[in-house]
Amino acid sequence: MTLPSELIRPEIAALSAYHVPPSNGLIKLDAMENPYTWPQAMREKWQDRVANIALNRYPDPHANALKESLRNTFAIPQSQSLLLGNGSDEIIQLLAMALAKPGAKVLAPEPGFVMYRMIATFTGMQYVGVPLNGDDFSLDMPAMREAIGKHDPALIFIAYPNNPTANLFDDADIDEIISLANGLVVIDEAYFPFAERSYLAGLEAHPNLLVMRTVSKMGLAGLRLGYLIGDQQWLHEFEKVRMPYNINVMTQAAAEFALAHADEFDRQAAEIRDERTRVGLALAEFEHLQVFPSAANFILVRVNRGAQVVFDHLLANGILIKNLATAGGALDQCLRITVGTPEENDALLSALASAV
Ligand SMILES: *Cc1c(COP(=O)(O)O)cnc(C)c1O
Image (cartoon, rainbow, N blue to C red):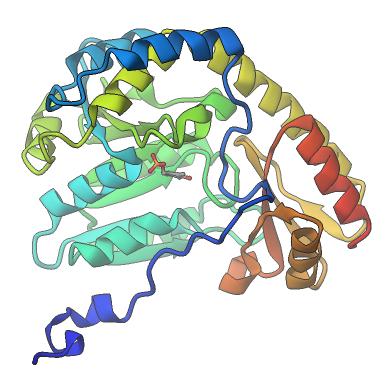
């Protein structure tokens, strides 16, 4: 019998699967989820709605009603098209599948969102990571100019704000990258409810620009829904590699329902932004912590030493965060903390007080 190692592509065999740590019973501050659930009245309305979903039917392959809700809720210009994905992860995969000519490259700043690299590998694209400036995680523009000139990437991802560093890159730097690039530039606005900044308005002027978003971080991570906004000429091509029923009936119905209650999500995002400020100031009081500025719903901190010890201590106290120190390099001794409810954040701060 043939062994897996003989048939599996070597670059896949060399990977480890994306690891999600167990979180049962823990205060979960590791994955940028919104900690809030829905008010009782909204839940009851949803229950009525869910009872009428036709599970026996295939979903609308174009999800037209949902697209209309997205357009109205987020003021997406009529001049721009929409493509939906099973999370923005799937959109990254669709882009890569369509662009993966032999030798084609994906470029992104590093440290950045790990899926850009992983999906480039899955699809046989070459990945070019360009280090950010080490002190403040801003774009290293001399390095970006050189890498874009040398590699001529088909696809550039700019997360705005960036994960895991939480900062917004400089708009003038991003504008320069957009004008330098021959290929596509995707601005990944996964954290737009917390950043309150967007490149939507730039789409009209730049046909090689696409804006990618998700409903995950605003409070619907369980639905798996991402959307790509941009020129119809591009989206028309990416539609060809999209599975026709990638957005299931439950997700279409739930997302439409949620968007009809967008004010509730706005309220939750405002609470999370207030807590981000409060937790950021409280963290800055710790002598052994360096706190980086955040435009997202998480905060990056550097411990002066022993990130693993702090992580373990929090875990022993029932709090799960993300230890980035294992990656080394620019994230040496760094921890990523998702902003939770005021009670969860208080638990984090008091467990930290006994750790550092
Ligand atoms: C979380 C995250 C995503 C993934 O979003 P999904 O829609 O849940 O797949 C994409 N980009 C960045 C930068 C993220 O942090």
